[in-house]
Length: 218
Image (cartoon, rainbow, N blue to C red; front, side, top):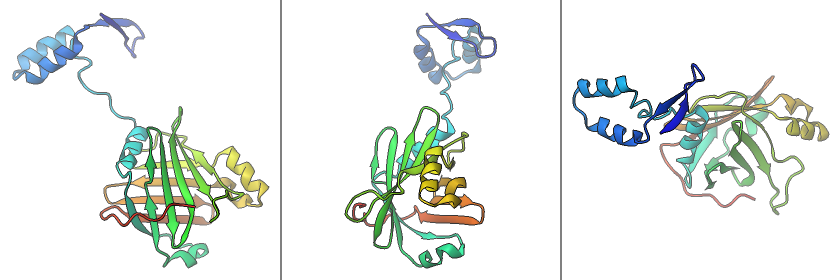
């Protein structure tokens, strides 16, 4: 016998050691009569799978793209990004482990950027790695933020963290201390977004067609 705690009453109730056998038996039953008997006996409480958390579902959706590359484009209209409007863009879900995804983001011949998404004990983390062409790290790198809510299976937001705020202030980027990043994935697009007051940057990638794997990031 195993014990479980009823979340509504915080009291312990006993459940059968052979619950898996009852679930298998339930799957083969054809009549409501048999199911009703098991329900009344409290023997199939564990047959229904637990719903997947939104953040886990999001990470799973993104992990399904591992090894693939997709072309994208700028879809936001801020004047600050006008020079990027016609620039070719490619994202490559390069490496995937159980809790971390590395996604290089190339703009034309600039291969300095990699997005790093990581599962943490409290949610998800997004970091931006910036390297120079010779491989050494830029002075502004590994900035980003953590999720503060559950989000959805399709969209997660990452308000700037304190480490990044300190880095921005140290390097004269005070305007960036209110950054909020977002990552989206649907059946048709992957999107990366940055928002703050008077600033909106968003790129979207077409998931309906893969492209040739780009060269490795710097």
